[in-house]
Image 1 (spheres, one colour):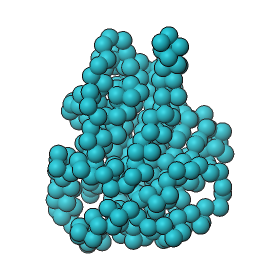
Image 2 (image 1 turned 90 degrees about the vertical axis):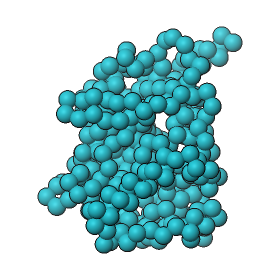
Image 3 (image 1 turned 180 degrees about the horizontal axis):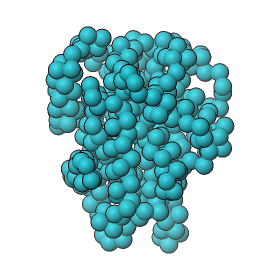
Image 4 (image 1 turned 90 degrees about the horizontal axis):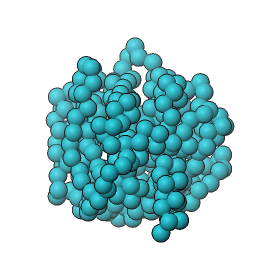
Length: 343
């Protein structure tokens, strides 16, 4: 793992290969034809993928939850809809309030909070904190990215407004997400500033950040167009679903925000073998240029979605440890340090 502040990243990742486990999985698994997928086929694919992601059998890939953490499905009832959330709590905590981390899973048109049990359960136990992962609406014909972004934001706002019911401290709140979830998380951070909701931190793992520009603007997209975990045809389908004709791609592109200053400090985690690597790098640069604290951390040899596959990608553990440390410093830091002084 390394950090850098270079503007020229065109050489990053040259000569690297995905981990052996990722290559073997890709060789055994046959992706659908993303270019010709019908609405019915997409729904079937998403349902099957989520059954797999949520099964115990796949934990050899997605990782085993941390012992001593309770994991439950709950519901957030909003005025016009009910959103399932997966809630992680440290089981040994008694009394008092905990920091809140609102998490958004990746996947776009296929994905579930359950695929993130490994990372979120460790976060809950080690910060400690209440981690709430949003089971947002998946992209599909008639369900654009703006709907999923509203789910992420509305859950965050609801829990903060009902802090007592959730046992959380509304002054110690962070947001985190991967891929599409990182994009939603970045949008939530921007909305939080506009609404006066104070966030302590944001964590963006292999984020998409720009659906308004051309994919040709980012060299990593063409360099890793055949990536085993995120190919260009899959990205093209994501974009078509996320921003249907007649909608404004800038509204769901954090990169296009007029003002990125004054946002919560950010950790941007970039696996180098990722079509979206340059979007993550450039978004971190934009945050810094706007005056927002932004830490860019790159993981050579890691692929897109690596942090949800610790059984295949060794770098996932180092990334999880870095995220935990970053959130502890920004969200739980003062109380943790005080407790350590008293020991």
